Length: 404
Ligand SMILES: *Cc1c(COP(=O)(O)O)cnc(C)c1O
Image 1 (cartoon, rainbow, N blue to C red):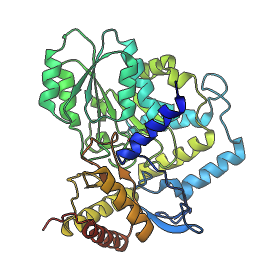
Image 2 (cartoon, helix red, strand yellow):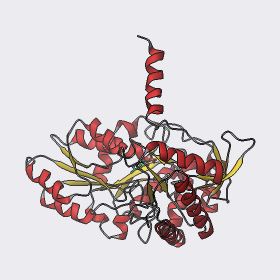
Image 3 (tube, rainbow, N blue to C red):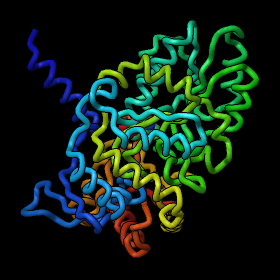
Image 4 (cartoon, protein in one colour):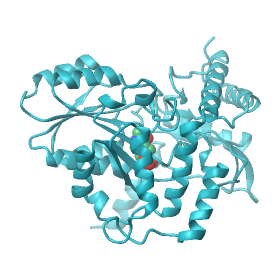
């Protein structure tokens, strides 16, 4: 076996399809978001504006968050010291779990080292605990949910995205006695649409199923206290398990679930991805605590983000750019071709100092490659007008059509 050749061919395939991923080399400057410095292929760092960060509300630089982390580092040092079971259970972890349970109006919450792991570990474990469980999964669910469902070893039924009739058809056809779990997201991060949560819960009631909602792209940003779409729509009590990240709108790192205490106890006791790994650094947890507490009582960031997203969608639409019909803070621009999406992104960075990463398969289906903008409270209207003008120029240069 010529190992070298196999590895090289694997990489070559990605190049040939135009979806070889290049990670940009940048540094943000605290207090200056969305301005940053780019180190890739230039003489010295070049100033850029970041348009695709998932630190949606710039909480990663919020003075309260930074101060809390500095203080924790100063007081207790860097790491947690081990797994939650052996040496890594700190008062910060306990406090944050209580804060997150309260955020979602649940009895308990459980921290993981990332949102990915929280999805993978929880779904895999639930599926193993419930004998003969069938998991009903929205077709656009995140890779981490898909991994968890696969690792659960359960039967999986995929329903067409947000299609309640299809979901009901599958539920009705399944064994009435089998345990069932419906897994879906609130905000879908690539299209910016929202799952019909309360209708899904109606079906769950009718067919005696549990519900699992990934609120990763909603926590911190929706609801009067930042509890996500379930908070905004007053349906958190109807969803069995709410999952979220601490790395996107909360600006730091980590993931969690919130649910009844017995479910949390089961995951805590059985999930390898929770048990056999060093817990989050108390420094990170202290930062998240400050962030969650701040966003529970401040709406300024949420309002600024919604205003920016509305303004950018409007700029794009008026310029005839193919902005997708998002109902959230996510502003996707359809390109439909991986090579062109990469080209536009390269020109934006090299000539306009604009950083927006192209989104390719498998993150989105082939033929729907796009640019995904995440404007926030720190992006000014002037920046958005300049961005629109740059895109219109590039669209013309690449001979792509603008709507009339
Ligand atoms: C990013 C993401 C995750 C994973 O969260 P991390 O904290 O980044 O690991 C889970 N679900 C969705 C929908 C995501 O976009």
